Length: 238
Image (spheres, rainbow, N blue to C red):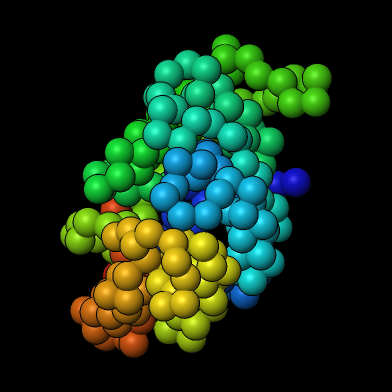
């Protein structure tokens, strides 16, 4: 299956938090989108890997993605090395996306920066035909995405561009809240974590509102880039 967009996240819920609105919008526009989680989030303070598997499946259905896979790398301990790069390359060549979305280049959780560089490096390497990979015992062809964009997470990084997600903010929040074990719930006895506070949940909305305000819309999601953005005409900008 060829996808238009493939979004990677170090943990289940990274993609929903960082670019859930953009994904929902692109799907409504007719794009085929997939998600690949690097780990099962098994080191998370709340819930369990098994619970998060189910939550990720529920969130995928809410967003309407075509496929979601989990590479089951070690939460907290995966590396940007050849073995892990080859796992990413296999996914890129399997789905041949034009656009790859991935973790923030710098963030509070160490897996986010690692995941960002791992996926970015693998996107380049995936275009080298002398790197051989197989899927289901079939040799894969080299494939390099046209662009890699990094969504913004915990840290308030300055975006290089903002996507208008007005009309899709509720879908984003619904997908986030599919992770019942992870976020604010006044009725749970689970330990409080930085993302399980009411303040954090509200911050998802007010960040989207603030980014929307800055581009003259109601809601937005920000991304950073690795190379200059290119447009055919000044009228491509809004």
